[in-house]
Structure formats: C-alpha cells, structure tokens
Length: 450
Image (cartoon, rainbow, N blue to C red; front, side, top):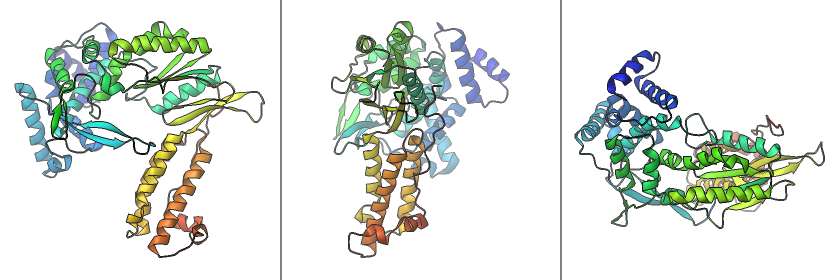
C-alpha cells in the first residue's frame, strides 16, 4: 500500500483518530483482497502517533525492566517531554536502520495452582516492547482479516468467555466427546521458518520481515550468558501472541477445510478443544491436529492430551480455567447440561494469592490495608469465574478468606485459641469491607441451548 493511498483513505475516514483510521484502512484492504501482500509498512512504525499509542499501551500494561534496566517509571518521571524524547530516539533508530533488539531477560514465574513449578518468561527491554507494540498495531489488522471465528485468544473484541460459551452450546447440542489438546511448549518450539512463511503470505515488506526475524533471534540473557533462540516466539513480549495466532491459523484453516467433519474446534491461542459426536471423530481430530502442527515444529503433549467422554457426567475436562462437566437436570431426569466452575488449578491459584497477602509477615499492617490488597485480587478472580456454576467454589473461597484474615487478626491482637470464627465473625469481616464472592454468580443462560 502506497503512502498516497493510505493518506487518501485515512482522510475519508471521519471521526477516527489517525492510528485507528490507519488500522481500518489496512483491515479493509486485506479483507477485500485475501491474496494481497502488503509492502511499505515499516515506515509506519516510526510515525509519531503510532509510537505514542504504543507507549500508552506499554505503560498501561506496566511490566519490569529488561536487561538494560530502563523502566517505564524512569522515562515517565521526566514528564511528556521525556517520553517524547525517548520515542523520537526510537523512531530515528528505525528510520536510520540502526535499531537492534536486546536479548530478553529471563525470569521464572510460578505456575498458577502448581506448587513449586515455574515457567520461563522473557522480558524485553522497554525500547523493544514499544517497537514491538507499534509493529502489532500495524500488523494486527492485516491478519485479523484472515483469522477464523474459531480463534478467540488475544484478538480484538474476542474473549475467553465467548470461547466458553461456544463450548457450552456445542456440548448441549450433543457433542459428547471432547478432544482436549495440549501443545507441548508451544511458544518455545514454533519453527521460525515455518512462522515467517505464514507471515510472508501477507507481508512482503523486507524491512518489516527483517525486524520480525531479529526479535525471534534476539536470544535470552540468563545467569550472565546470552543463549541464541533457534525456535519459539519471544514469550512475554507484546508481539508474541499475534505471532502465535499467525502460526496456529494453519490449524483453523485445516478445520475449515476438512476438520469440521470431525468436530467443532474452539481455540484460545495455543489452548484448544474439539467437541465431537463420537469417539471415532475425536480420534480423527487428534490425527488431524498432529499432522497439521508437525510442520510448525509443534507436537501434542502425550501426557496432557486426552479424549474425554462427557455424555453422562462421569468425566470432565479443564479449559480456560474452568472445569467442564455434564450435570443431570433436576427437572428433567436423563437430560444432561454442561456446567462449569473454577478448576482445581484455578482454586489453588486464588488460595495461593490469598495466602501470600495474609502471611504472618503482614501482621504489622492495619487490617484495612490487608483488606485493600485482597479486594482487587478477589474482584478480578470473581469477575472471570462468575459466569457459570461457581456458587459452591465461591463459598469455599469466601470461607478460606475468612479463616486467613481471622487468623492474621488473632496474631495481630495476640489472641490465642482455635475458635477464631467465634471471635472474628462474618459481620466483623463485612465491617472491614472485605469483598465477598458469594452472591455474584450470574446464571443468565446456564441451561439454554442457544
């Protein structure tokens, strides 16, 4: 797309800011011509409005510094002029061709709900995060024009709740066999050449392609050593989810061509399930997934991938934080509906967070301060899991919060004995202003087919 064409179309797009107008132009162009390959994209990264939007997105998401130690707070401390100087410097590096990404700083974070287990995360330098976000702003609309309705993860105007609703409706229509897939270390193992081959189906801008490859090969800094990256996407970076979706789009395409006969695919980035009418179709779905993922350098985890018979509620499966299981209707015996509630891993995760915020080391804090730190955690967790059949799990977490806060208060006020629930009642906890999950579950369409 030439600069003149872009400018002309943007001027015709009234009521939008320039960045949003640019994205709309790119999306429409890609949607109108599925075979179009885009050039002249790299120069748009250095536009002042694109860079500023990228900065706002990065600053909003916060995040730790990379290996150079430059932080968001450090840049923002100098005010808007300091930010503008920082962004102008990045834009000049892009224009001159002198920009080079720094290796990612490797950290290991605990896996939610898995005591003692961690997963590696690469933290890009702040400058790299801003430029990656600028690239995402420009590239995302082009690939969004191609992405399938079965894909829900890390996409505009799509969410995990939408994916969960498709699962619920599909199961309630009789798809009682579930191929529950787990891609083994997806972000670490995607083949670079295969990924770039998918990118090049739409992009022929040599500078943009070179930039993407430089991020893939930037390496990881850990324990004083920089390790080369021969496979995988920079997990933890702003561009990584988009690149993963571009690579895994081949799975969506395979389902559109022949996979729909096997079952209904629901994918949230690298996490997906296929709901099938028979066990034979579920096996067919497994084979198709294996053969489709292999050219990307990916394989299904042999221990975590399984086929589940959910028809009578004897088995269930976990997907997107929920445990899903068919439950017999109390009004219509013999009729089963798919219910969902927080999975054991999700329950362990929230208990772990509550435990961290109520440890004995916080006994010196005012109880109001402890409650203020707990409430956002409980609200955020509850907002996600309230869509479903979570009442019993919510009550269990409320009881756990009650116990942890009461025991902390017992230590604080040097009150001994085991009958903490008599001294620190629910009324006492409510007067502190603690957020309660009980009563927040929504049941608008729990048993509906549509």
